[in-house]
Length: 124
Image (cartoon, rainbow, N blue to C red; front, side, top):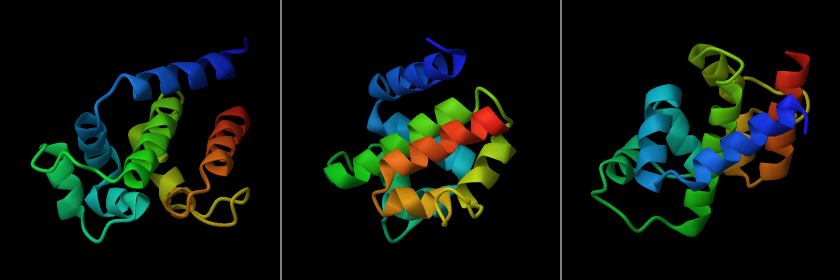
């Protein structure tokens, strides 16, 4: 297994073993509330903060899936780049996606976004 495959497998394993509230907390810290709300497709960062503090524990499955995909990508990219570079990657236009990764995840384009993240670490 290549180093890049191991990195993705490790990121996936971290995601599976992390609670949704912890994922929300970490995404809030790294990506900001506004960006995390966009990714999760919720109206405001207040919703994300409620998830992070466990004031709300019933998260719609499709929104949790978006958070988990974003978190997997964060775990992968932070193995190779600084947090500010990772944040920029999520908001910038991506040539593979023809959109920003944040919007692609919001729109349910999970596999494409994971592939774009893998390309980013391969090509730097």
